[in-house]
Amino acid sequence: MNVPDEAVTFIEEQYPQLVGLLGLYCGDRLLAEDLAQETLERICRDWRRVRRKDSPAAWSRRVAINLANSYFRRKAAERRATSRLQAQVVEPALEDPVGALAVREAVATLPSRMRTAVILHYYLDMSFSGGC
Image 1: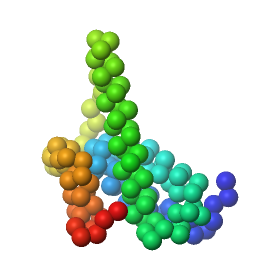
Image 2: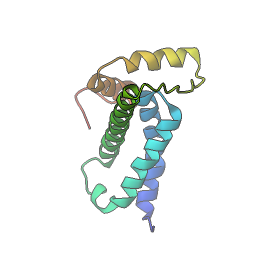
Image 3: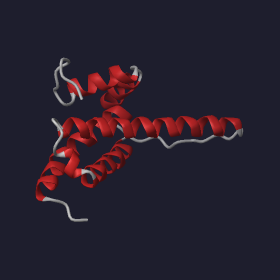
């Protein structure tokens, strides 16, 4: 795939922000990296359309959050199916500093829209009057 230089520059700027945003939103760094990479793949694929957007960065954040929400919906369906089959799935616990874990847990308890607003405001320093 031949990616224009401006797209490469945009991707290099967005990747750390997307991983941070998704890490807070999902509470899982590895999942955040996977979802950020999938977001970047979509940016590359649709670059001609993305670059014409009023805010390509906002578009990429919206895509990232949508991908995370889709992931959580699939996981919820998987849990329901597993429950119906009387199986127990044990997910390994990831090590995380105590303070960061407490913040992630608190953020995870918020409703989806509020969680998104808190992450965008405190992690990306965006105002509440703006938006994706």
